[in-house]
Image: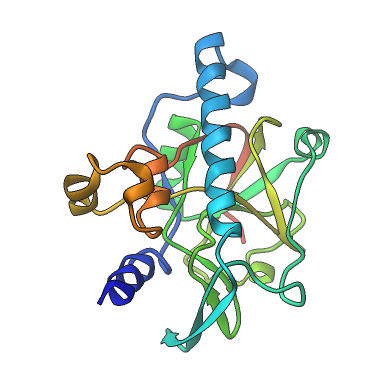
Length: 225
């Protein structure tokens, strides 16, 4: 029963669409001293989340979700060559975030990206614990990274080098983070000590039972695929 409960929680966030935040704008180029301190705190939380993901063994479950086998832990080397970008690499790069036209205005207004509920997919597998803000590059089309036609818009951003960004495979980068938890999660577990939480809840607890928020500096937007 415990295993099934954890599975239900993970699968609730395994597939879906990226979301935008509605907080005040805060890009890498205009962070105040106070917000910079918050940026380091965010980076620390991302690091801790990544360690949680890395600590899980890679397990191919017998479960199938949308015709894909559910996998826990990180992909094996033949599916992804995961490494953290150096701060210099992050500073030099302009990333592209594909999204839907209906939420571009929210992203531009907030200067913040939030993780969606889409997990990393390498057909025929879905790696349900690899969640966060997915990015690509301006040279990469949405078709190249498996996005359907509903992703009709894009936002080009710069990410502060303090933030951990991971190269997953060609054209795919990930800033690990938890999406917005379901309300019952916070109501039930917000007072539970972190180490006492089941592993499936810990990513949400790291971000205070709210979605992770990554501040970015927006350099361009567009609506053409």
